[in-house]
Image (tube, rainbow, N blue to C red):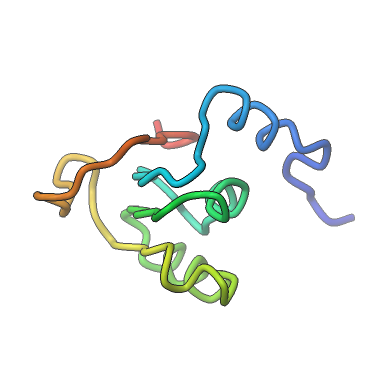
Amino acid sequence: MTLQKDPEGFERKIIHKYADFKDKRVLEVGCGEGRLTWKYAASTRQVAGIDLEANDLRVARIDRPSDLENKVLFTQASARNIPFHHEIFDIAILAWSL
């Protein structure tokens, strides 16, 4: 049996209930393999996902849909040292990262 994460789509429903991603610049802290990223990224202006795990970021880059290549950037970084010094984000997401 294959493990399915959120087969009912609750995460997508909840995240869109509390945030309007349309044309927003989003910072996702602890993006991992991008599982949550793909649930909102299509409607954003841009997404910057950071995570400490290089292997998770590798998977996220491989799984990134081709239409999001110029919209979603993944960077290995810590929440203590976010590498975006001059950027402004409209929304910051920290889910499953604590």
